[in-house]
Amino acid sequence: MRFSTKTTVLFLSSLLLISCSGNKGAKEYLSDAGKAYQEGNYSLAKLKIDSIKILYPKSFDEINAGFELMQVIRMAENRRNIVYCDSMLREKYTELNGMLTRFDYIRDERYQEFGDYYPKSYPYQSSLNQNGIRSGVREKGVLFIESILSGSAIKHNKVKVSTRDGNFAETLVVSSDGLNYRFNTLDKSYEIVRYSGNSENGVASFIYTFRDQPVSLQFIGNRTITVTMTPAAKKGVSDSFELSSLLLDIEQLKLEKEKSEALIRYLESKKP
Image (cartoon, rainbow, N blue to C red; front, top):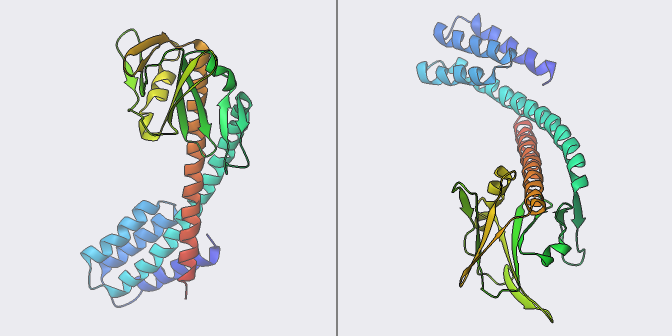
């Protein structure tokens, strides 16, 4: 916020306060709004300005002055938000740089604009060798899990994870081609189902929450097959969940900063 803007607002408020016209109560509200603005209490300042229009609808000078002050407050709010977002982004990126050492980044430049992160604790390629859940995170933070069942053809399309005391979570049914697929090698059959967004349905969060406890995994199709998740598989999903949460936080902060920058440009364009 520039000093000249503050000076203009204070001068305008002072001018109105010593004016012979207008309502004394409206002037007091405007003065209180100016003080709250100076103290950085923008919510209170806006409340005082709004009260002028409601309580003193005929105090046109004060209402107009309040409108001008409201624009300055919005500008200040968004500049403060940008500073906050920049500060948080620096912290998040520092955290991200450390976290990414636990992941492999894979991107096929022929087909992918953005790549995927796979946890080193549960390597993506070798995960085909055992029944379980593997996980990954899209570059923008979207988490996905995949259930892998080999050696048994049950046409599974959902999975359920549970603890010994009865807590559980389960995916939604996935039947779409490309997300639910099967293939055979010379000696074994495979079923792989990918769950992301709504279909993942909180399974990764559940595994993360109970990562230090035994977790049973059920493949549900024509019949049900149950296995126990390995510590490596639970760590892989947990690492992915943490990375996804961090990347989504970063994306949200970037979005909030962009919104504030856009609003500042808009307010500046409205200046006489």
